[in-house]
Amino acid sequence: MAQDATGARRAGIRRTRWKAPIAVLAGDMWRTDRRNTLVLGLLIALGSVLPATLAVTSGLLAGALLDSGSRSGLDRRTVVVALLLGVVFLLLQTVGPVAQAVAESLGRRLDRSVSQRTMAALGGPADLARVEHPETVGLAAAVDGPLGGGTVRDAVIGTVGIGIARGGAVCGALVLFAYRWWLAVLLLAAYGYAMVVVSRMYQAALESAEGAPAMMRRAMYLKDTLCTPAAAKDVRTFGLADWLLGRYTAEWRSAIARARRDRTGVGRVSLLSGCAVLAVQGLAFLVLARDMANGDLSIGRFTAFAVASTGLLGLSIVTPDLLNIAVGGTMLTSLAELEERTGRPAEHTGDAPARFRTAIVFDGVGFRYPGSDTWVLRDLHMTIPAGTSLAVVGVNGAGKTTLAKLLCGLHRPTEGRILVDGVDMRDIRPDLWARHCAALFQDWIRWSLPLRDNVVLGAPGHPVTPQALERTARSAGLLGLVTELPDGWSTVLSREFGGVDLSGGQWQRVGLARALWALSAGAETLLLDEPSAALDVRGETELYDQLLDAAAGKTVVLISHRFSTVRHADRIVVLDGGAIAEQGGHAALMATNGLYARMFRVQAERFTAGAETQR
Image 1: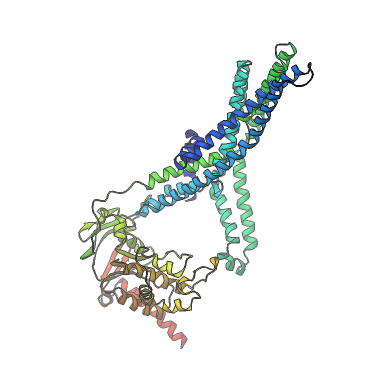
Image 2: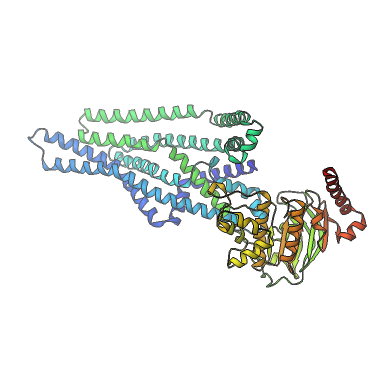
């Protein structure tokens, strides 16, 4: 996965090189905030003109002072030029900071826009295949910037310094054209060559930093493991601190060595470009000095042209802003591609049924994940009548969770079809079908929010009343916990934010309450993937009885590894190797003495042996 992210980032860098990062930035800045972008452009233009203006006014003042030297006192022309020079100098000191402030504001707004667009792009597709695709993951990683460093705001701020420096150099060259055009062209060529070399240096720096992300990510992972509270117990119990520190140092050095190898030869090329600039700049001063000595150039003109020639240094200026702009352009280019990839909506010709009335039918369903040749499910034929309970069992990797995702519309079958009351699920808008499903997966989110929010997020638009909350809490076996918490429903479930932490079993009941809240809001199918994994056997039996009462008349699909729970279902399906091996009621499957019966006896013997040991 890290290699996929690396490939996407490198591709983004190459694309940005051709699209010009500054142009990519300017386009997004204009779309985000036209007024501030226009103000920033005018400030950069003013800042670009000021160095050349300073050169001209300096020359005028030098000439005026020389002329006034033969007379007593300063004439009016000299005073005006001196005041003009002071105004130019004052503007030079103020335009830059003002432009930086505008860029800071614009950059923050663009950063927010990037975050919102990224969340919308990743949260939009109902089909998880597009979100989980390696290319999507790589583009999302590229939007985060190289190794988590650098932001679009830094790039916007960087445009101020680079824009003023480059613009000032061009204006200085225009002043030199009034002296000797060939000298201006020669200086532009030398400084332009140095600018290309410097840009390539920063491009190499960016690509080399991106070229070893897997190794650097491992280093950062080891660092986070050592510094994160979640790992503190294991680190101290097993004495891992020294091992983690040593491994981190080794991984970091390996990544840095890779980056340095990628930059071999940069110093030699930089020296050559610096020598070329020094030679041409020296030639320019020799020509200026010769013409002044011959009387072909006045002191004032010499001063103006000399100051203007040094202003061309802005073309080859070395600054981290170059890297920031390159990173920002890459991030925005990757974001545009991420939006394009995730934003193509699937075709849906029908709406979800107002009520799920008859059955969900799996008709020859097969599924494999994008980029994989392995079938997770194949030739699956199954009917789930409305209002019944179905249990799905099987060993790890049998395809149980994938079946649940297909049922919720989170994935589309690779082959075959899923019919809801006779309508192909592909023709139903996923967001509409989602309202019919109340699901709790194994890896559900534990929000660091109040208990109330952790429950009602199952259906955030459903009206919240104390009575409704109490009914849901009772069905999920959560009432006792609510009374124990210091602030009841308002208690934040995270010590990080001043609240409390829950046990695994308590969190399990919170998750179940969330699913039941969605059921109370109108969902007609309750799907539970290992709903009682963190509960003991007695708590599991009690909970399942409560769930049956709460889901009376609803369709229940239960995935579990505990057969004491699934035997109560109307029908049990045994998955093996991505296909249905057996199905039927508990008694019928036990009588068949097949796979289900063998797995049931193995688990029952374990509990029986445990009970005998306790005696």
